[in-house]
Image (cartoon, rainbow over the protein chains, first blue to last red):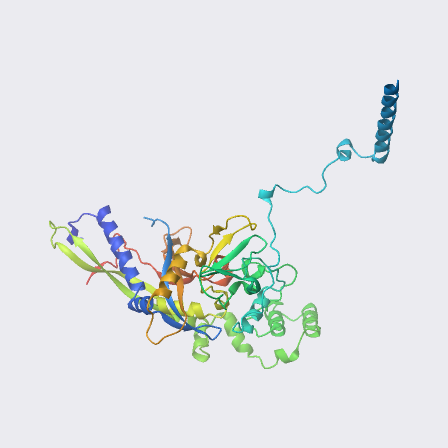
Length: 68
Length: 390
């Protein structure tokens, strides 16, 4: 509290923090291992004993407007 | 004169017809019941729900299709009604312009693959209503009932009698016991050799003694791949403040799983793998030969985006020394904050992942467990105690 001069944080400041927080967490989820798989694919042996190289691709992200 | 005679004759004929009609009718019924009406009345066509019929005959399924998978399906859907999606009829395929077309099914739907051959892996080949509906087919429920922690029905009935049939021995209780052990389905060999003490401990929910002795706690495997990563964010401070500039804060701990391991697990799961569409196709509707085909959208693997991603992937140079089939794994993320209870502020913000190679009918079916939990987002609280200086 001493750093923000005793006043509560305003909306713009909090919006910035929420955004930073959200982006930082997606950065953790989409980690280096995933980026490696995205570029070079991952070889997976299916249930039918056939090897295939899968390239993960992002198609949809469904989310509603974040609640306050 | 002749003219008049004709008229009279005509009159008498119509009289007889009216009399015959009256005689045939049931005069006992009310006027409304006697009124003539259409017997085969149908809803207007736009309200009719056409029940799916059998698809065109399919060639024998791919030799790679495992028998276990179909066995597992037949357990969950004992009375399969075959449902019609645009299915492949390999016997009558038409080729032209670098694309393969399947035959039209009864709804006039056909598939078009931008490939030189149809995929061997045909997930809709053994599709039944039971794969899509989320309730068992009428009549029989042959799902094996889980008597956990009891091993079988006989043990369960005996244990149930021990715990629930009163604290004192009585005549009626004895009769109940006789009913259980005297039933033709009761198998003494099922009851013999049971670790009753262990079962009773499990009933009590005594996890600690279980984990030390047996270590087969069910959640142990599933929860093992959750990771906790602290999240740091840069928080700016105004130049008029005591310490201006950006400061790094630890704003919370993200609970998440490794994305690649989730995808790997999902694609190899025996219950999911036979139903995955690896190669995209376009669906068209063509009611008859003389109309232009109309593109039909409905699944991710029939979408333009997926077709394009697949096309780009096939056109890319690929990994050196690797001639495995290269396929797109369609990721579909979703997240939504949720309240845990009605009267408190406890919230969770889960992130889910579904695979777009799987049909929407399976994805939206809870028992298919098609959605994977990926992470639980943390939020920045206004005066969060976790927002501390590093």
